[in-house]
Length: 217
Image 1 (tube, rainbow, N blue to C red):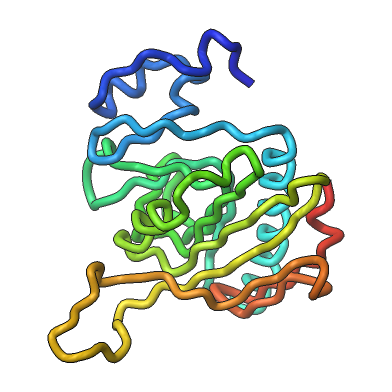
Image 2 (image 1 turned 60 degrees about the vertical axis):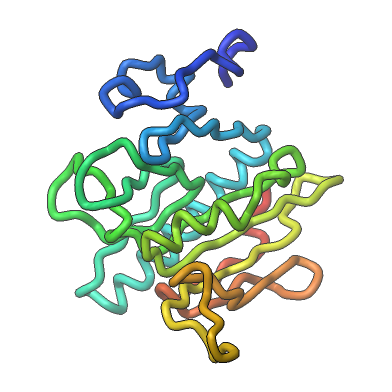
């Protein structure tokens, strides 16, 4: 955790990737670039970090099991890793808490949105005020097939809800002359909580079965 002197550093409104790379790691971890604009990324409490690590481990296990059944598939699961939008340039990126992506053909490559299958954000009571629609919009526009929203309970260190959204690229039937504001959108496909299910279970982007005990922290 950064010191109090670094929690709200003075930064310019816009920044290039080259300028971003010159920042101290403690400050760089607190921001994203949105077409060069500096966007602060709120740091969560220790419970949020603990759940992020637990979810990463659980998804890694599911990915390994899926690859054992489908040897032609190559997936990786990581946490707090930059996803770069567009085919070139690095001044437009976001940093999801957890991401699943196709394993790249060489080490140390940048992860582009086109290679990402799933991104997840973990929201604690301290960060829930972040606009989830704005958060989803960036990933939907980039064509990432799956978005997970994980919410922590308010009064105990536990998961309250997990929601899985799938990318829709063809809007439903609308009244004549009415058109969607955005060409793509995430639709809620499933939601799970410890009070109404034994596990998170879904078949995409690969078979996933995560008992709640695996997400205890």
